[in-house]
Image 1 (cartoon, rainbow, N blue to C red):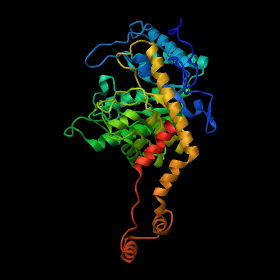
Image 2 (image 1 turned 135 degrees about the vertical axis):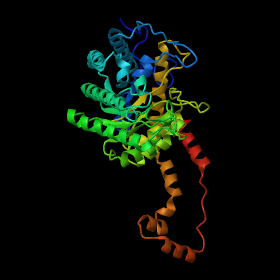
Image 3 (image 1 turned 120 degrees about the vertical axis):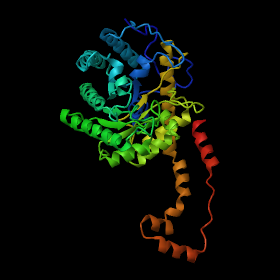
Image 4 (image 1 turned 90 degrees about the horizontal axis):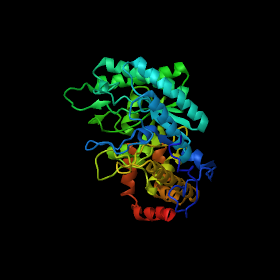
Length: 437
């Protein structure tokens, strides 16, 4: 029986449509810079927020009492939930999905029972993937919810917790490969510390690196060729997390000889918590060769926690798409909606409204970014700002032809610097606005 019987497959109706269950800007087959929007954006639905979100928070109980939920944590209910999820993906028109192992299948009394539960649900996932054509963008293991990981997983002071996490990742990698997953993500929600006094930071980081090398080695052993990602986040639930931001993650990967195996999965709201805009994180990852994928959401700048709201800011999505297009596109990553409807938006139809808004906003960002790139005005303005480096002393410095002594001689002869030019920030912002409205 259909879970959304009154909701059709969401159509594209164009910018003038007032149908709330239609796309105004996301036209999957429309070609932008030689690829369809579907190929450029590679939209993915997050299983955890879409199917496991209940609206509960520290101050109140669940508000989202889904009609397809039986109320128990059985494998049968988990399998039914999978069928509902793929009906949603099919109707919203998303080509990919992402999941944690514990999102899709209940944990048993033992590791063996847990693995058997996961195998049973994965069988249904495969059936639904075959039926709908929806693919797995990336898989991951939940190494933060169970109390055994209170001190961390790969960074735990309890060696048994490390061992259990290793077993869990082994199984998650096997399942991700079985489902044809194009990537695998590590997010260290408990990989960090609460107090300096009881923490051996170097030992914990050494252990985390060893853990990731084990994952890389096992992927080679089983023939998993998907992209590995680290997802930066500075805090929450842990006071300080080792995957703080893009710079910290890249330094860790280089320090521990993991740089050839990992890229970054950047989340907008995580960048906010680290004191950055997402464009900073994406550009830094891109210029360092670590740009991988994006968890698409946004946060409330007046709040100090990860609100995981759906993206509706066209300026934001334009910057995101400009950066990804600059560095060759999203593949094998994608735009994964790691976002949740608000606690008050408890009806199933709200899931559609939320994803339609996010997909339309990214489609607009894609089209605007493509127009900017085709026109070239902004790029030309930036190039003009740095023109002093294209010839003369600037070009010589970039070519490595000078040192401190020769530059002192240059300035003693010149006397003072050439006059500075205006940064023209306001003009840049006006030019950007011309493309948007």
